[in-house]
Length: 101
Image 1 (tube, rainbow, N blue to C red):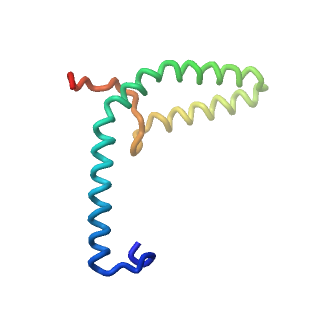
Image 2 (cartoon, helix red, strand yellow):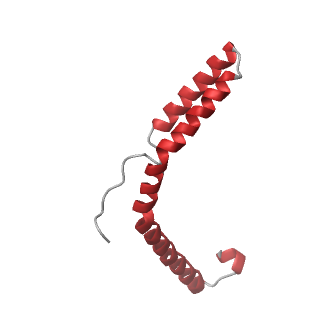
């Protein structure tokens, strides 16, 4: 930003400080909402899994035997990747009860 706006050294420092403060506030808002978001995702998960299962069953019904094997292999690999921990991934553990607010 310093180059784009041709900021002075002092302006650049102030700009960075303001941006850092803003990021911190946004992170705090997101952290405060995390339990509600996790609870919503956990509640939706069985419905989503049922839709995915039905979709895969329907897709398999239109494939020939060779295609079915390849698709099953694809699904297995996708499931293996999904089960690996990843940065920011949504593990579907029950939400923590943080008591009344």
